[in-house]
Image (tube, rainbow over all chains, first blue to last red; front, top):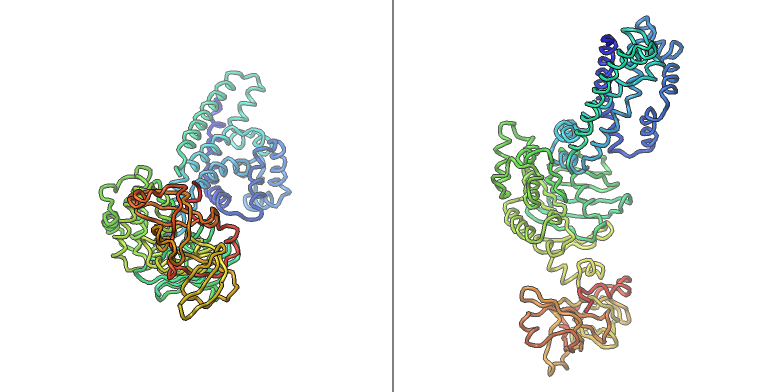
Length: 220
Length: 378
């Protein structure tokens, strides 16, 4: 068992899920309730990582985060390090790749809140923020929790994009999924089997969590 | 006038509405679905912004398109009962009401919420979630939440449409009782004319976003401003005729209907030869005896339908066998029984002269006259 890779994966997955939370809630509400030109385009852009081959996505991320890119140069100027093949670069890539997994379940649960409920809150005197905290959040939380679980589990298992953007530097970018690949390539079956079983169990728990939360979506 | 509003827009649905409601008054907005009733309520509450017009309540201006004023719903002090109540499903009845008590210190809110639930006859249901309440109970929680805000205006959007008949009667009675103690304007949206007549001091008839007439319910039924209003308020005896002659000395205007002369009270606003719509209230269609059939305005009609309900019978009878000439009237069920009023029977009916009202012809009546009567089928 590559404990270092496991710990790195868990860090990456937790950071991804937590950092994605605020922007995803904002995007999910925007997509669930407003109707404007360009909404469909934004929705499509967010869904794109679901259908693109990880290598294609990884290639573009490599370009976008690389030393020649503005983002890569800015990061280099600040930290003196390269963004690609680093944990930070991996995190940026992971945030983008996981956007659909975070936004979709939230969007569905926000869309399930009838418009009149928010209006009833406003005419009752609740501010937009109070309405969000007291009405929307409690009603949408199953979707939000499902989104957290999904993006966490998906980050644990992400392979292609990680390999393209991060490579396999121990302690920096070698996640558990990469470690399994390395062990399997080296015919180290026992290690690969152990880590695979662990990942399987974690993913299974996450999926059960998501489906149970999905069933407790707010009643209309 | 404590609440006054003029609302205009062309999209998404056209509005050209003018409404006013005094303190302690209940104004009913009636009209077919899609006539803009709910949109008007939403404008009053600040949930929808019309293109032009104003909304004023007491001394405050809530909306004024020309002056760029649009007060947020949170600051309008409006009590709003939504059609499906819009109760917060994750909160108890008590917590639902507490949400509207933000103007009180937190320590006082629970007691105050209990007070409002009790006022709405809902003691003992504090901890129930909306899903655990019956439709009628949900409506009362919604009403308690609306009143808890101590609103300056109470807006009710079809508050009785989602409950069964029996519950509805009960809730209506409770609302009639409750409103005596409310010294604020109350605006009720409904498509149910009976409900409007029962509750409202005045009613405003709407058609395609336009306010056509505002009057007390009895006045509206007796003196609709136009054939369209008569149609929208479901007046059964609405027909078309032609002005024959004015006889001011006899207080009479003669009209022609189905080739017969018919005497109405003198209504000089209509020119001789003009095609008019005319109306006779159900109560002014009188079943007379055979030997009285030579009386003024008496026509012979064949009964096409008799509906009896709680001691009353509503009878439809056709003149000259014509569907578009169906007269409707009501008599006691016992009378109907005694006189043997059954479909197929020929009866003499007198149309009381003083109750016949002429209205500017409505182009739609010619085509739709057959559907204005209540019971056409036999």
